[in-house]
Length: 87
Image (cartoon, rainbow, N blue to C red; front, side):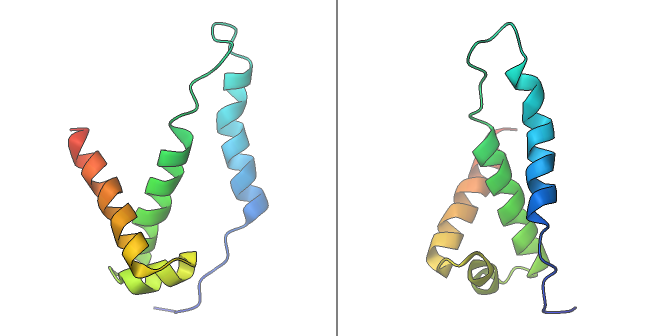
């Protein structure tokens, strides 16, 4: 496996998120659409993909994000525990 990461195309990422959010702005039934799902969803994808990409190496995943391993581990546990609670 190559240790060099392919950078995420930020513009493409932003475009994808905007495409998902845009219909909410035109929802005539709700003046204030529920956006509370956006940040948790992005964090879940980011952390789970990083832990998969680094083959479980939390130190490496944390380095990629620019945070310490303890914070990465804590957030990963929060994400995995909330997923378990949903079922």
